[in-house]
Length: 322
Image (tube, rainbow, N blue to C red; front, side, top):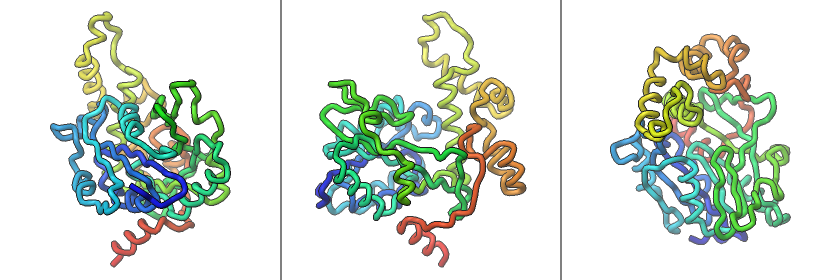
């Protein structure tokens, strides 16, 4: 599992139906990584999209099985999970590096940026957490979503014995022995990295199938987290998980979208039909009225992408153009 680098980076990844960019993500980090721990399978909000065993139903399993791993860096853990918090803590339990670096299956880094982040950590070993800004691609590879206030995501944390994810939203790592939260001790902001040209290249809103799956998942998540539409029940009934599941299924019926929207104004349950598809016909009108993200913010508009893609994506685009 040796990377030959001065610091050991353990990459932790949650994967479920991630075939679209999983190959490129693994290729972009493999050489740099000390180890890559993949936790595959559905959490409770994705089970309706999973196979009978709770696993992915697209090409994810084949990609993981066939990915070249000559240095034995890749560890794959399959399962059906209660939550993404549980999945994050499963990969951090296995991590043996100096840092844990969470990566999603549609997030790609430029190899030179990985090395530049490593250099910053070598120069200041007191840094305990690192946030990044996204290049968030929209409707293909030539356009990006723009937030009025640049949006940052926590991805990299110093690792010590027994460290745990306090939550996945936002990713937050804690030392249970002291109660210290790595995000707060000595963080490095995404704004500083963006000023150096270091960002995550996020290919999450590229294809129709990604968006459909994302909206279905997040609709389930919001119903699960907020209990919207679930009536007050006696304590003994509220503990019955099947009751909440029935109510969630009820609110997921397509003709109830407008009513759900009135009850939960923080999410566009009809994002695919009201924003994603109409954008092709009148982008300005959609962006002006709704923005371009499933929630009312932070992404309000799009603009042409004028930079360069990570090499693994550029290579894919060249191959597809032939």
